[in-house]
Amino acid sequence: MSSLTIRNLRKNFGAVEVLKGINIEAKAGEFIALVGPSGCGKSTLLAMIAGLETVSSGEIRIGERLVNSVAPKDRDIAMVFQSYALYPTMTVRENITFGMESRGVPKPQRDEAVKRVAALLQIEPLLNRKPGQLSGGQRQRVAMGRALVRDPKLFLFDEPLSNLDAKLRVDMRTEIKKLHHRVGKTTIYVTHDQVEAMTLASRIAVMHQGQVQQFDEPQAVYDRPANMFVAGFMG
Image 1: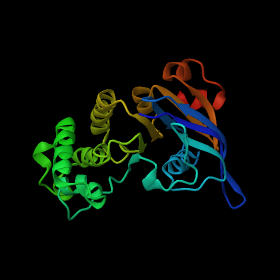
Image 2: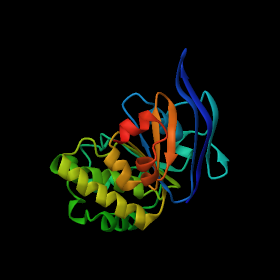
Image 3: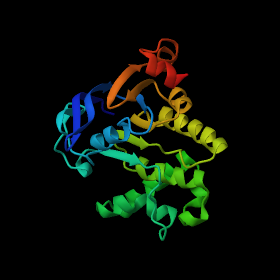
């Protein structure tokens, strides 16, 4: 487990400043939700933590390590995308182990990791199926399994439930909450859904126009919004 520290982080695309001095600190094992309307900068911030976008200025530290210039593959993170990003021609087992195989992890070790993760996510009966044979919720579990099998320092979720119907979103929120309690990894979770943020997070960063308007525990954000924007958004 590692902490995540973001200090005075800024991102410019040409003359447009997208992130305007972001300061967030996630303690080791904490679940942080980044919430706000479309275009507020939350997905850009997540991409910068992952190393998929460059830093214009400021610092990103995973544990004590400054990672501004570290390649994504060397940051020891795992990311779950909105689109699942599964390989359609591979089985569930092959999707989960693909990254490990690419890194030269021996087969016995891969098999043991798949067994552990499949049991954790209750997807043992699905291991020989292909993504096209799975429901949306099952595909999302496989995507989470592919992240979990790496045992990373940091989990990043980019609106992972937005493609699911309302009932399945509720079910998957419960699964993600249980999963976090089991594995205890530091997690950064992007969503535009206030209920999702309130349900899952230990703290919420409410973002608007490239700034963090409030960063606090869910009940405090709900009961004592920092300004009219937060009050309107959380209401």
